[in-house]
Length: 233
Image (cartoon, rainbow, N blue to C red; front, side, top):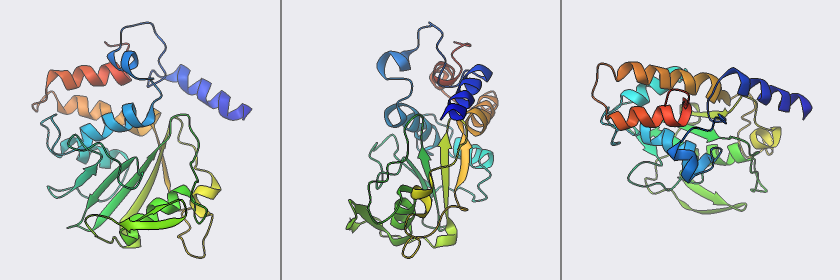
């Protein structure tokens, strides 16, 4: 644990993303704790990724995001992001889900700020559970299959990608990816680690470049700086 704590300390000193402690007014940290994964960071990220979001940039933020995480899939007008500004409900407890039933691909993003993996399903690890749900178009809860997903679309195994988003890009625990390999897919070598300090930072920087030439509400620009670049606000 000592090495991990030192890595976080070093990361905090290197940049100002999320963990900035300067005593400047920030509307986000006034209303929500700065490490709130669901109500702050996941919601903010998905609001920018949503092609139908009020940012009025269409699919551009999503396209740039997929480039920054080296995804390989190409988004389109049919690509859906969940949660979104119309419905903040998570799909099967998945923090961020990007899917396209026409192009037949799905991207699962598990967002971790300070919390560990929530392996509450006795039959499989957390990331295994999410993968299974998307592949089989069904939901699981407490070790049981509960119901089918609304759109009932089943994505093939090779068209599902899993990303693990953390502050420093560390690995998920082994239980989460490979608890039960007899029934559920072993994701130990499949999950791609991404971080706020690298991929998210790169994405927001690219987004700022886009806004010089394309329409975007000035409030989005202020929001990005308030949340992730407070020294500019």
